[in-house]
Image (tube, rainbow, N blue to C red; front, side):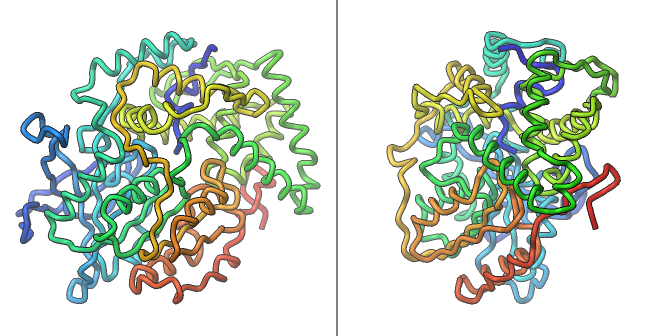
Length: 492
């Protein structure tokens, strides 16, 4: 299956920062980790957050601590009210798989500011991400210049493995959560609070399974239930989210009257790219140079998928489809390329493959048929091809078995229009916990913590570790992002 230049094969399997040390004296904790002032920055942007950075050596293979070691990159966001600081900090787990906690924190800093008032926030770059022996793959111009076949993708994957200064078998979630507990113990915390986003919810649940005695409370945003095989249901979930979005547009008079039958428009665009795919002259986001881009069915499908993640870009989909239907594909392709660049900046592809090829792909059923979906078989075939050559780590026998926890309070958050981790995933995960609430945020997509009342409610939850004090009704005041009725902005 040929792939295109503009949306590289690496991006197609994606689910969705720099830490530099300032010249100030290091602060030594009462334990074995030293922190120095630093700045956390989101790559490719001006977003940054002041923090304290440190590191911790761990064994790459926990079963052989005398062999090779790797360095974990850490950061601490000190509680705003230090004199009233609570003894149980918040540990943040980033998404991906492949995102760095320290690099992605500037995006969530405002959402966790209220929770940070009385609690430190601890960030650990999961092994294989950020500054923790990042597993990156650098293919130079190959990924941009070739219309790659599956065989060429496999060859590039082999090349990546050969360049890694790591044994990819030891970069799984279970091993990484052992790292987290070593850091917890080194910092002298008895109990901690967990918050995970997207894949980070899997990480948080694995930590809870392994170390329940050290967990005080948990927040899971955009939930991955234990039984889910990452990558297997993306096509169906995307179709479901897009259908909901189109139905919402039809229900709203302004949107329905403006755009008409969006489903018919999308089918017409698919017919065009299947029979006579257009070629665009576009400026590449990395080099700034112009190149010819062939808009195939795969490019259209992945563009819509990437735009469907957040509520803000979901609101653009109707007008971008209309523009393409009128013959102007440039706005749709430009938005897609922007999303591609954002993902390329933040995902460590090798770590992503270490997780998916160990924990998920080996358990895919042999008869997956997604030909009738917008994405088709693309993600499945790419994942299986790469995982056929990627080293696989050990996965516990009960890894995909839901746990039963009757004590730790858990707040689960889902977006109504999430194309990756839809609300039914939150329902599945909630069944594990006797002490839990699952909130579905109306009209919102993937990663919902930043919306409306949620930052204050999460802070209140961490303060009391008590679900009964929360105002679940406040989410009904959030509502969806208004659709863009013109390229200048959304409707009033």
